[in-house]
Amino acid sequence: MLKRKKHIWSLAATTLAMSAILAACGGDNNLEDAMQDERNNEEANNAEDNANNDATEGEPQEGGDITIGVISDPVSFMTTHSQDTSSGDIEDMIYSQLVRVDENIEMQPELAIDWEESDDGLTYTFDIHEGVTFHDGEPLTAEDVEFTFNIFIDEDYTGPRAGYFSALEEVEALDETTVEFRLSEPDARFISNIGFGILPKHILEDVSATDLEEHEFGRNPIGSGPYQFDSWEDGQYVQLTAYEDYWEGAPNLDRITLSIVGDQNALMAQIEGGDVDLGIIPATDYSTAEGWEEQGLINLQSTLGYSYNYMGYNLRLDMFSDKETRQALTHAIDRQTIIEQVGQGQGEVAHGPVSPLSWAYPDEMPEFEYDPEKARELLAEAGWEEGADGILERDGERFSFTLKTNSGNQIREDISVVIQSMLNEVGVEVEVEYVEWGAFLDQINPPNFDFDAIILGWALGTDPDPGAIWHSKEIEAGLNNIAYARDDVDELIDQNVSIVDRDERAEALHEIFETIAEDQPYTFLYYPNDLKAIPPNLEGFVHHPRLNFYRPQDWYYSE
Image (cartoon, rainbow, N blue to C red):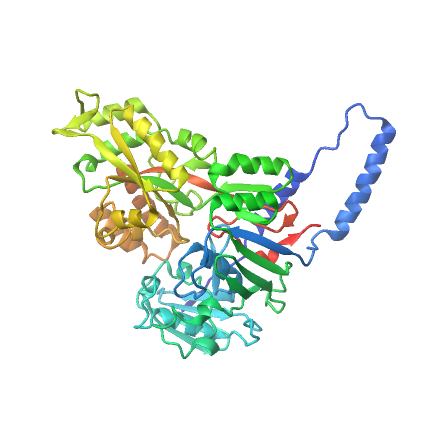
């Protein structure tokens, strides 16, 4: 028996967000000590303006171009293999997906009209829209969906997403608008994992899975999304044009140019000079961007992102082996001050390895607030005693370690210096080291693990499954480079992916996140805000916690 899943677009949240924007833009027209005839004139003018607004309300202006500034070149637009942010941002404009994550981090149908899930969680059946075409005019059917996802389970596929589909056994197009996925075991992450651009079978069906990554299609893609690929000049730009036959309706803007500017300083200069219309602002430049907003050059959007910054401890080292010591270090760090001084106030204190925007965030997350006295008490309980030079010692070992981060990342460099000072106040000696990005990754990852503690950040996935970072099987070859290991956490992680009922799964995830937070293998520093400079007259731009440039087909200029 099949159970129908109901899916409704989150219009209410969007409506509320737009209402808030309109309310913020609307001024108070009361004038103190004004003459009555001036009041009457103003009321008449307001009435005329309101009539004009009513006549055009809900009618986006068509046409126009926008230039988005990005730091780095994309790598490839082959959705089965690309991993970098630049490629992904552009793929989101070029391709349609079966499902897509919305601004509330919920999976919603896109090409799919709806889907059905079998009671045993092993079969998913999707109905897709008719009349969808690729940019070359060929129809997109269920066979293209079948073709795309069969790549991931091809025995010759060695791309980065094979692990996403370990439970997927077969994909079959039942007819032109119906496709069925069959799994070997229930996988609660399945719907979140299928948000990839659909590839054209008629172009790529004769290309082997091993040859896809280097195929020329990756530099000259044909999708079915709102914008079609036009041109790409390495180190300069990628240009997209509106696809007039897009199945949801033609986009409002005629052209989107992704200008590759090379570094953040160049991006800021080009935003100020008007060469770039839209760009991501680092927190270090927040006050500068605020000034531009006051001058009317931009609108500055600051909203909580879907990531966190952390200080991670190498748990292979004796000094970090007990949770009391790690909890003490967190108590000794004033994270709110870090947000204010380093992040210019743009973020929230983090307490665990999950975003507060996620449905999986627990109500009772352990929190270790800034409290230097509590830090000293815990350190004493953990056996640390003050040495002759004021630095703590335990079993003949000085509490002294090196804190590494990647050079060139000003925020992380600044965080490390602030932490160095704060930990010194409780008798912990910290040496700061900045390492070039490539060398840094080589040092901290398998097989080297050459670090004491690190400053880094995680961008979080749509699904809250924590296994890739926190399962002990990921220690030697995966992302668990700090060597966090608990049998009970491993067991819960293994269980959570097979629980398809969200409420039941949330209970398991809450226990995982609360346990990790209690153990403090990281000092969870803060959730940074996403900052974007947007043209003052650009409408329809909605913040998305995970996607940089969400639904560009909805953007338009108000004048």
